[in-house]
Length: 250
Image (tube, rainbow, N blue to C red; front, top):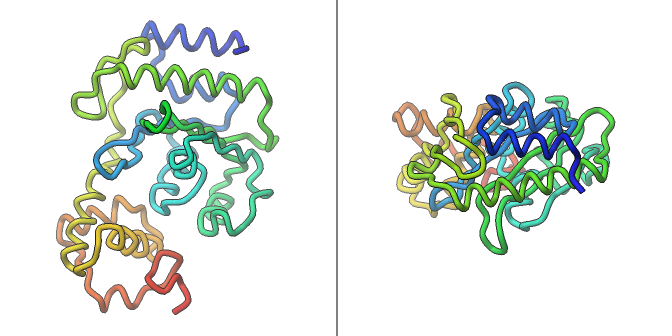
């Protein structure tokens, strides 16, 4: 059974009375932060729709840059990934993300995929607080919220893939102006041509460069598209890390 707080939040969302959905959801769920991302385009890029500035935004960008973590796993499996205490996660599960998340101050993360059956439309990311646990009530509330968001998005009108009137949830806010993840697909295509490699390998090279330079993936992609950065084999051979061709062993 959902809590009174979640029932009230869903009612407010239906009426379009919530000006900051991410913050409202975090408050009701008792979470450190909340982010909602939609899967867009042929590459199913996770594009943030609701995201609290600060810790939630930084962790969301971290998962996107690295391509690993509870969010990507939840999307792939179609099942919630509940890890309220990251210190208890095996290091080999997310070898790059775990130390970076701890450095950010993220204690635990629970991700709930949005979708029905094989259809995936997004993911709800919930950062746990310092208690490093998730109660049955929090899980129930997050599950109901995810179901409501899934129904709203599947029944909504996303003409431009980001905005539109969604029945039952009022008007969705615009994407944060600092995130332009569509540019990653464009940069990946350019790198694929420059190196004569597959799109999958091109994305790995892009992630390797972002990791090596400790930069957000979107920033590096923007440099590629603007032709401030060109990939060639000499540049690639000078990099080593978990996304480099040698897996960081060279």
